[in-house]
Amino acid sequence: VNFNSTTAPYLGTIATDAGSFNTTGSRHSIKYSGTAYNVSTYDNLSFHIRLKAAFASTANIYISLYSNGVIVTSPLLLSSTQGFNKSIVGFYQTISAKLSDFAFTSAVSTIDGVLFANTGSNGSGFYLDYLKLTGGIATYVPSPITLTTNNSSGPATLIGNVLNVPNY
Figure 1: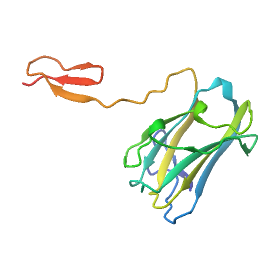
Figure 2: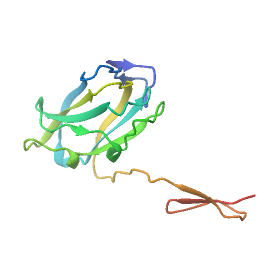
Figure 3: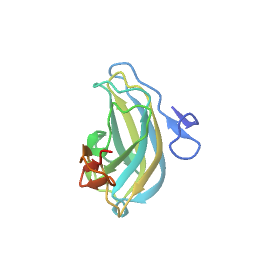
Figure 4: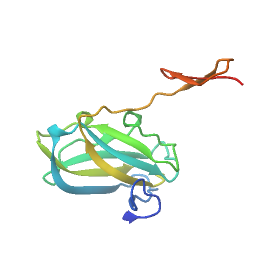
């Protein structure tokens, strides 16, 4: 793990290069720790992830939270629920995990660390950047947009999740 990689940062000049894991049953982990934050003030743990290659179906990433240096949640599987897609390569994905989705193993008022653990085999490696707690804002996971043509001229319109584009 390289916490100061300049290869592909999302924001600023460095990102975390998490490397790869290719042995069945291997487990690599990355822990970020620091200031304690009041859990009641925040709604989401957000970050950006960029895969180096598509993940195998057997490769997974789990997230756990710490309080006072001790893990206080069961591992949360990173999935499409949080905006993660194992096949998107070379672009950063915006991930937002609701704190309410974490199964807290004890009552805590603060969190002071995050653990990312890779499991399975044939994990391509990835970059992590811009990890943050957010609160008071809605989580947005975009819906697919349907593209249609309307056999007319004029501007394109977006109604709901349908983009109407005129034929010229």
